[in-house]
Length: 360
Image (tube, rainbow, N blue to C red; front, side, top):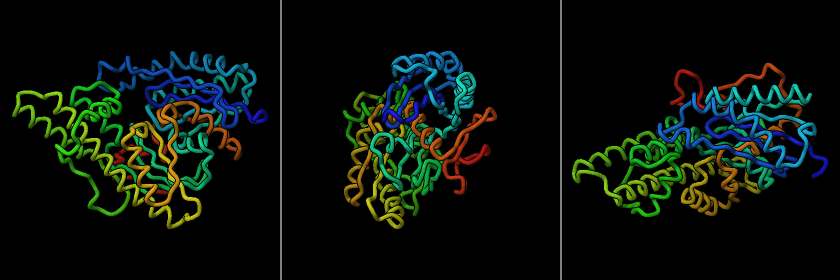
């Protein structure tokens, strides 16, 4: 795709500092600088530490991305940057870097919704045609979307409290496992018996596609405390079984809610239906397998991006920016960093959105 524009993408919404260069759907470079070591002692991401690390590493990530892509910075046609939602300090670091680069290079700047980056990743990797059903499942968000265009999303349901990624992280902390919690819990679960503990499957007794994971985490806490009280501590097999039971509960909830979302989606779109999954939790192999089985049962194509594009990265931001730019979207120096930014701006706020606005 030699005639496609060169897009530089920047991502800094949480704890990964990322830069990437794309030409069309070709990823020329994708640099991700993680912060796990910086936050390990605190049991989770510390916003102030994350923001400072972004400010220190963004220019280096850009330099490395441009060098790896083998193109001079002066040849970049546009800058795409995550403008929200996310930790405001990190988002602000990215937006300010993008403004400086856009001004210096004299090129357009496109502010991208971080969630749209995840939601459009199946188009980057598989050229998936609109409209498709998307399960966006990450550390801070979980929602079912019908994706009709780069800025056209219909939310069918979402989490009213903890997202699955949050629940995995909290479970890891409760069991003394390292962060990030998703990979730690998944690894432990492989050695466990998922049937030993019967954890609740929240909201399956109610209609609709909304989800809840806070009660599941509380149930695990109570079971852990019972084991500690009865046995004077938590044995290795207990921990593995707790992880397996927890993961199985998340799997069952996502599978059932996916069936309901598929029914709503097929009510509108019966031709060449497809479901995609993206976000960090989509890297969990057991969850992927369950979703793939649900899609097979309903005759839907199933698309899951490569694992490196499920977690936060700048390639997805560059691609989302390219699609928006093709529609004539660009932003000036008034572009603001946004801690919250719902994809479906017409949907009612979710129950758990709190005082600061609609949960993204």
